[in-house]
Image 1 (cartoon, rainbow, N blue to C red):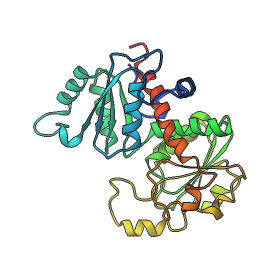
Image 2 (tube, rainbow, N blue to C red):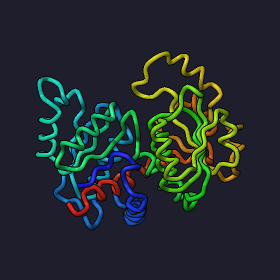
Image 3 (cartoon, helix red, strand yellow):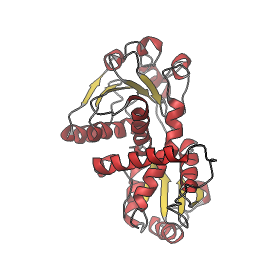
Length: 309
């Protein structure tokens, strides 16, 4: 049984297999209708249970369509509609029910420990749809998007401008496993996970952390960013915005990158805050191809989890 919890827990060979399978399935669909299944229907008769403790647009749509295109079915449950460790029901009991009624589970939650606990209790695979610590599905599809446009990502320079958050953590793991150079520009009080950084550097010392966005953007092949204020952020948000005031990705910053550099944002975006409208809606932005590829990469992830089961 294969769980998809974090990129660091999967070999680079298997991650590459997921991406190549995702590319192939995307290519082979051509102009088929969105809900028509792939010709081979590899997951016919299988059920994906999607559980959301956090709001979602792209994750929900992409996983739902991915499972349908693979020939399977889906059920969506939100936290307010189920007993997730509350109401007298233990997480162990919930896991037993999930295992009985589904073939695979996708969980989008706050605490990473909740995801890990379910992975230990379930008798079916579970996919990390996002936690406060990581967002591996997003980053794997970002690697796929980069390679569609720019070719192999090995040796390329990626610039991350902004918060050292869950997406940054998964990006650091990807840098180590896919062998690309990553420069992270963030305020000193908003660094990514030290644990993940240390792990990544042991595997492949490709990561540099700076505190001036210009140092990261210069001569980069891709500039990436995310919202400054994420779901569940607590504390003085006004103070946080002030700390990030010089970290907006605008046309002036983008000009420091290579002429053919691309811009990525995992969405949703706040135009005028972490990115200017002229950048996200400009010719170098690939955010919509990036969003669409969530669908295709989820297919690769689901199929990888269930292969041989």
